[in-house]
Image (cartoon, rainbow, N blue to C red; front, side, top):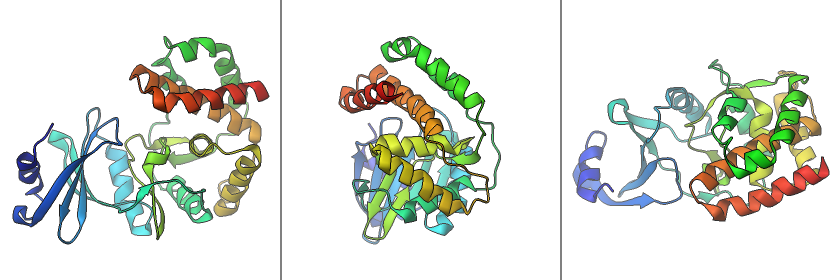
Length: 266
């Protein structure tokens, strides 16, 4: 645990130490250590990465912050795995997904960079020994066969659209934490929203249609509930595996219920 005096020392690289009035550790992040640093004028988010340096995500945030989509990184310390962002006041998303937010997501997907394509099968292999993967391995394999026959809708994806990574306030909804951002099928992000907000069938279809309207058909996006279901399955298995490996059962219970319902309807 980094003490306040150490945080002040770290932050002296981008702000006058005597202007810092408080610091606190934020507890809603599981992958990294996050700290809120406040001066009289504003707040800063100090993120200490535990795994990898998200170069593509940080560069994307530099660009996308100009469009009011996400906070801008203002200081980077790659050697020590630290980054500082302007802090967005608000809370994790609780209300419905807005059309404005869907439009922001479409803009993220159009961000003009090409990275290695996220290998969902490889990501799932990390959880091949978990109960949830073993139990539903036939359905997972069937879903991969299905999406292999479908059009690939390439985009620069966030890849971690849980509610904690969507901040809302009076001005709207904003994306944070681009740690896993890279090229993927945009249906992965759409499926993540459908799961995170536990959307019913009617609202899932509305999400796809709204997204299609936001893209103005310029990327050849087509509406497929079948494809969305496949990616919902992938996202659910990944999330459940991630949480249960870390004994975070409070997060996995609701996801398990969604998974059971999804597979009973397929």
